[in-house]
Length: 253
Image (cartoon, rainbow, N blue to C red):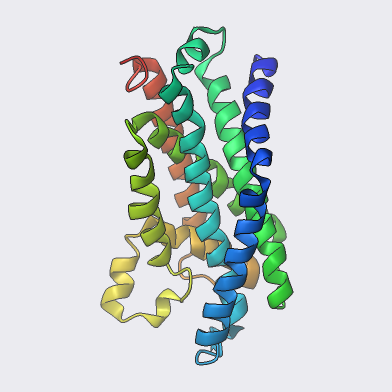
């Protein structure tokens, strides 16, 4: 393991993150505050409780998942896309660094950024509502696995994308709608039976449900199914990345 190479890639990506600290730190805080003003106050005044939980507290796990998934995907894709765009990726590929070490550096940095933002949003949410985390270890596990898996997805998208439009296509048109339709701001049990069945085909439902269970002990699907879903997604992404580096797809072309 070339730890020096991993540290160099990781440090470079984290330095880029801290150079835009205002955007990285202040933006999630403002967005979280606005979500609580709109959803927590306007809608919360009409929906007092969901499954015995105050609506303001109920939306916190979904709000964290929304930000973590979008940020992890964006950071993971931009991190590898820019070396492709400016041509420095060939220097990286010619260096004595394995694909696993490249993956560890870029994905590790993207996951760290997303984790940082998730914790910032959690701290901001605690100002507005009274939060109790029933299963803190499960909460950290789901949060870390989500950061890693969606950073891997972003890494794949960054390699796949040929321009900036394609880079934004999946996060904006796929990830964000799936999160909104995945029970982030409502319980799946509130939907009509036919829509409950359809919603279960949305993979984000299992992530949000498992993460919400770690807070309140309530979930729309069994917790082991949620854990199996996020673990399987992570493994699939790793297999795809390994195939990309072994074949050179969209890298050596």
